[in-house]
Length: 508
Image (tube, rainbow, N blue to C red; front, top):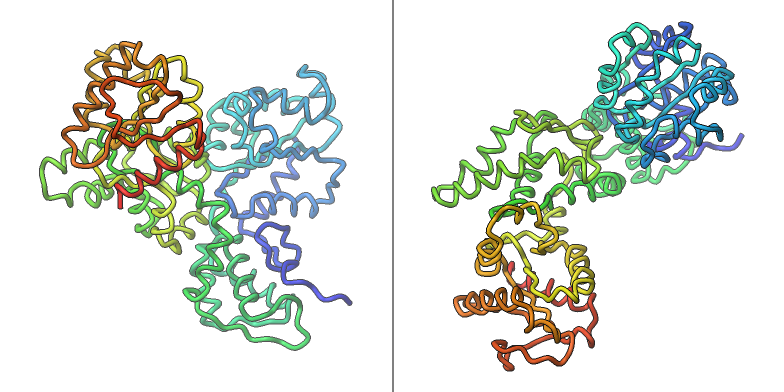
């Protein structure tokens, strides 16, 4: 008989053919499957085994693939209509009756990762579940808790027609049984101390168990089923980097996105990063905003600086739910404006934070140590806007904060634009990039911005004005002795990189 590979047994992304353990919800879920006409909703964090549970149940009840329409909602994340999602899967029109007639030919419609559907598509499907129940069409919805709760609230009469299950974390007995099945399959044995560490670190999440057990096996040079039993011992802190590497792809970019936040007020002062850093330092999954305030704001002794930081902190909290949505963190974090807690929805994310050195995140963002809310403000004539926008795009890709009038229309609307721009160009930007073009001296706004910039430059002890030449025009007021960069020679990308170098040096 061919020996099993390590990945056949411990694989966080695959079906656990040799390590499946029935959770405590299993008999109740089985009863729901067998109850004619019932819809089933299985909610819970990523990595807790929801999809595995449903696949095992279908197999256990001898329900073949041909009798199930399995839909991965990730493929339809841009669809506005739930009926359109079903129509594309069934290759038919969006007519409700036609879709229903086709669905009635199978036993179950499974929508996996339901939370990836747009809100409108989710609500449309939820609103039709009662009708489908009456027509004998059964749905199994798999998603995170927030989207499942939304489904429950659409139709109060759906309650008795839908059985909800919330799969969270498993107990130590479950975890121990999973590891024992893996040991048996590979003919290995984890030391008692290592097994205790693996179970404790996993927080009852099967996918974490698989990751840590697999890394321990790799460290012990076990890559397949052993002829003679092999004892494996290790200490989890020693394999931290190997475990983290597996989770980086899922978590790191999202965490960096959260730490960058978005520019909303002149006193941001790296507060999003401070929030992330403090969330990482807490042990639990419910982080009180009051505790964050004490750690980030209350510790500042200078009253003026404490006031600025407090304003920044509350601005960031007010925008945090939008950031979570924009950065695709809905399946990891939950925060509602005005709430007293930030909740970590995904236990594997909590596990990642426990292992992570926050300096790894700090190294991937531009922390502003200069006190200026913008790294760069741009001044230009309108006819070169397309070039400016290309330049700004490059700056943002390098993690820089840029003041650009089109990005700030909401803040400028209704205000005295002249006063607002004077404040920005005089006090709010670390550098002012001036696009010198033939039309620049002819524009009143450009002349105004440059005059403010020149006055600010005279008051500063470091460089401020950064001329970027688009042609050979001479602009009155920009001294010929000031070094400039010729965009025609270096190109937009290189020019942005040069600005980034200036910002890095200023923040060092």
